[in-house]
Image (cartoon, rainbow, N blue to C red; front, side, top):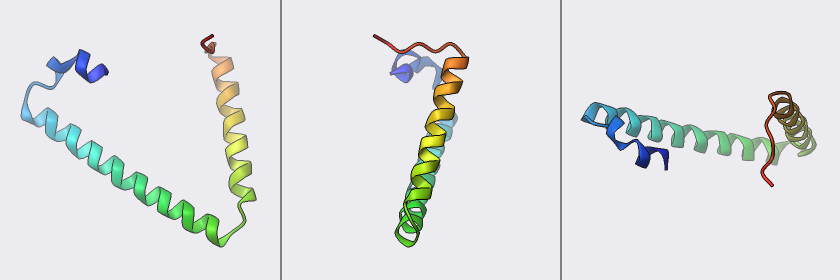
Length: 73
């Protein structure tokens, strides 16, 4: 939605080329990461991945609390 509000930023073809290349590269990297994660979890135990997600979630919550982020509602 932000791109729709600020459409004047992408005025020439070079801007669109950079945006397109970034989108394609991000998509390919995401596919590779998902593939590697699925292969890793299928060969190993899921517990390590679960603990990693829990620890990451706790770190994100602490960081959000530390920076004063407030939940909506």
